[in-house]
Image (cartoon, rainbow, N blue to C red):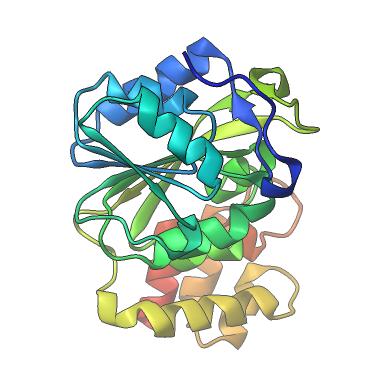
Length: 252
């Protein structure tokens, strides 16, 4: 049984206690091949559930006391290491699983996306973060910068009642999968990301004008804006999809 004692506030520990959510995480992971890595094992609830898959599993936990306790309760095919998830390098083609500490969401995502070894990630994050990263209701600059190389999918909302202690906001299951065929070559990462940041910070009356100011031919800029128009409100960079960003960048 997982340790049900409250998490340490200074470590941002909100432990998952809902069995249906644990089962969903295991199901999502089971569909993705590769060695398993769990960032932040906490009380071991997710770790124990994942261990039932019988696949190699490495857990990384910064709380030395909880890491030691979990080692005594887990199977021999699971390795629990004490360490900082922001410094951990996942093994080749790994599936990264994490109930991400809410206060570390952005650093964890940046560290994960910058790593070149893993292939799939199943993450439990704050609900609004999961929505925005998946481009629901408007995407963010960070997602747009990585879209040519990854897909971002929102699986479901997780109520705050599924955690102990109970956080102030709901969570969301976010799936990130590395594209087998990237939309742009890896050599374009820096240039593309710099250009996307420039577009997001530019002013203009809608995305067509913004794209034109950043080197996109007027005809293509207008086509992209028209494709994403849903109302009389101006289309903004947050409304663009991966294929829009790639087409605009290629034209530049």
